[in-house]
Length: 192
Image 1 (cartoon, rainbow, N blue to C red):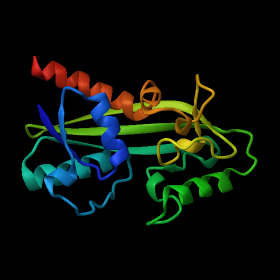
Image 2 (cartoon, rainbow, N blue to C red):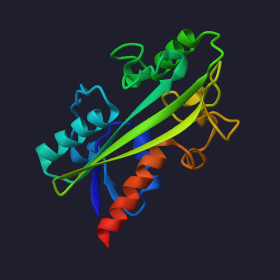
Image 3 (spheres, rainbow, N blue to C red):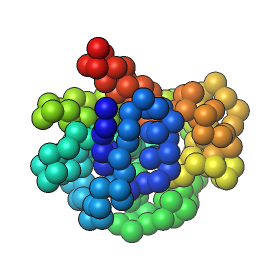
Image 4 (cartoon, one colour):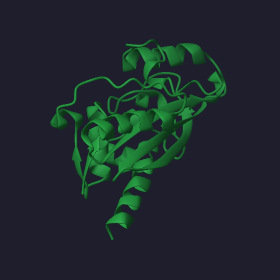
């Protein structure tokens, strides 16, 4: 089976290929698609569907996409669906992390979760899968691995941030891995 992964994020592509080894995953680069898809929905699932529909409508290819949000209790669920642009429309990962740490300040409640919604379009049929991981926001950055908010997110059950883990360790509990595992289970069932 072959699927286009509707993401320009090389880190996510690497994670997807590790989690879905049975699937031939085609990147947007390999497809020759270099446009930016506007994520205008107010939910993670909505944004994931926007991206998948764009590629399916243009190329007619089976595809999947994801959208991920970091939800912080002390910030009333922010940055949530706006995680990628929390510090502004063209903010870097570092600027977003700095804004979170600044807004958190000395808050005692550091509880947070990552949620990922994966949208699949297979033969014109849409499916959605969700994964989440609970954890907490650290008071400073730790680690060099990963991307996004990985350097300040410590999942429950581990003393390290995601940025202190190698990819296979991170994939044992990450939100994206959990959502993609549900995608994988669905695809394996369809293949039989």
